[in-house]
Length: 102
Image 1 (cartoon, one colour):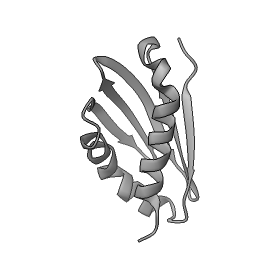
Image 2 (spheres, rainbow, N blue to C red):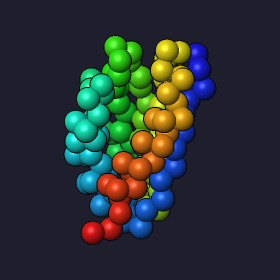
Image 3 (tube, rainbow, N blue to C red):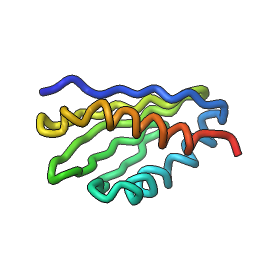
């Protein structure tokens, strides 16, 4: 099992507003990446567990929403490890866009 990829994204929205934005955000973000599909998305309190598929490989993880940051933790299968740095940058950028005050 590989080490999880962890991304922390600061925000100033508060927990409730950040969760509201994220609840529609995963599927919407995946729609912008042609090789990514969401297999499962489940919320329990302020934690979302998910399973996604990219290039035929399944990855899973969770998102923890706090008052001032969101922590994304994803475990990638071996074949997707080589894309970890690119995935980390994409998660950080999409998360920042989603959690920026409007």
